[in-house]
Amino acid sequence: VVKDSDLRVYKGTKPNIDSFSAFFDNCKANDTGLTKMLEDVGVTDCYYCGLVTDICVKSTALHGVEAGFRSYFIEDASKPLDEANLPQTRQELSAAGVHLVSAQEACDMAAGSKAMALRDYLSQLAKQRNAKAVHAHTQSHAHAHA
Image: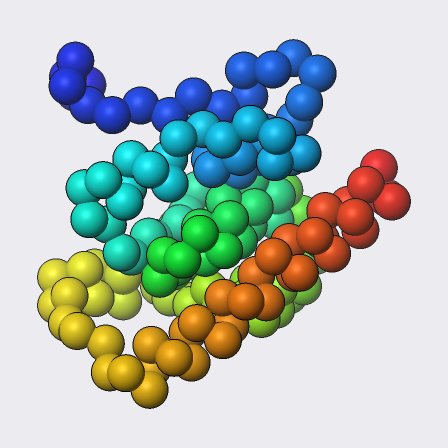
């Protein structure tokens, strides 16, 4: 059920620019407003799943962690375009600081929602610094093979 008061994100609205991520288009020229919406309501953790793990879900997760959200990819709630891409996708997400979890783990974490220890937080920040580089590398690699 969608209510008039529900927040909405519009992506892929420019016919000449692909938009894999829910946060930005592929050129990062157009912001969907999702970051601000999430920050405005105090969201700190984002869970990603869906179709086309190796393209759209990956791009959204990388942008999310780059924006500073604790980010989790729900593996068993997602499906790639090509199963052969999964090992590399997992490695790229992990290198960028995105945690790989099952649907049950995501539910347990969301239900428990505990504070993070300072050491874990600092470790997460260090990985988040890698997110932009990982995303840039995957984008240039994808365009080279297109």
